[in-house]
Length: 288
Length: 291
Image 1 (cartoon, helix red, strand yellow):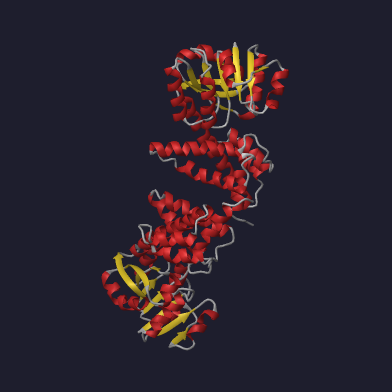
Image 2 (cartoon, helix red, strand yellow):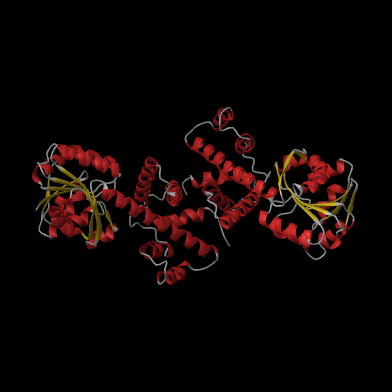
């Protein structure tokens, strides 16, 4: 299939590699030209603009930071996309924005699909991502060959925006669990107990989770090199809280976690790992 | 009247002195002898134990830190109950768990001793100027006997209900004051980080619906960066703990109080427990600033 890919960061680059490995034709475009070098070496071709990419592809994939970036790209692609072609956006953006874009595309007989992913750079590299997508069921047949190159769990959650709702839920559960790990780690530290051992014991019990394993492991090792940069989780949480306010729906625990993420950003740890939530608690008091 | 007074700290000292000024004889006992120094010049007798104090008094006031302290002073070995004459009234002005007050009241009643819970609000300033708010839980006839003495210590004296009801009112008071101190600190930090003149923001807000005595008084102390107590942060932490204990016991949802309780945990954990509650501002400033 003729595919396009925009957004060649920690997630996008390995995803591009898997698409090439599966035999797809891949066009790439990036703001910083050197970001494309690895994929060009593997056989991807460079285009001069998103518009040019749109004209040559059946499916264009984007993987960028936020709602504003996706809106900008949709405007640049919009002109060139052929009728019935698909823009699949893997970014994490607001469900309302995804719904709006889907409506705009549909009015011109093009398709916008929201397909945010979970699994981090490790999942992108291993092609074991969880892909949660929203859009017309009829598109599944054309999307599945692409999705199957990238992830292990592929779920069509519902219509446009549904993927982003699922991703918001994913972030709620995950980041809240990271905060819970931080609090457990700090609680153990305050009692003079090695969190590494506490974590090891917990992993075998009812509190065992992927977050406790991965982020808890980073906390026990004082390793704050990202994984996913904390500023991205912060951005996702801002979006979730906006959505909660729009709906008039209380997210009690998430509201508290949002504040801890704000304090993390204030401390200047936005480009480090979200396990820095532990350091935020360390700033809140010293214990024997 | 012969009045016993136990607990001569920041609050108790000026309260006892106000009773003395009204012409009553004080009977005192203190763990730390230094607490007794301010009473050398007044009509006060020092005793060796709370039981001794009770033996010489018609009414014994206590104002100590927490429920176990009240329990020990009232019912412990050589406690007030051990020396009480029939009909003695024990008036506890500490802030403790309402349920603990009810239990202490029941234990004393079994020994023929009347109990009144009468926690106060108004801080050290209110104690010195005899302007405290006193919230009382008692039998009405017992309240009437103590009321003239309350009026020497406070300006607003209210019988809320039966024993324990004073502590319920105080818990409500601490929810409002704790959450409001936190809210004023958050608003001031918000204004400062946005480059606004905090003093002007406060001045403007005082004229509107956000007016409160806390915005006025605690707000001024925040502006002056005066963190001297007033009311110590660790005591506010304790009071919010009492509030949350009751919430857990009754299955009550108190999300704002719960968040504020965590803020006070952090204030105390950061070594600012001996500061005034307005230290909340210092903590918020620190946590809003790069490492």
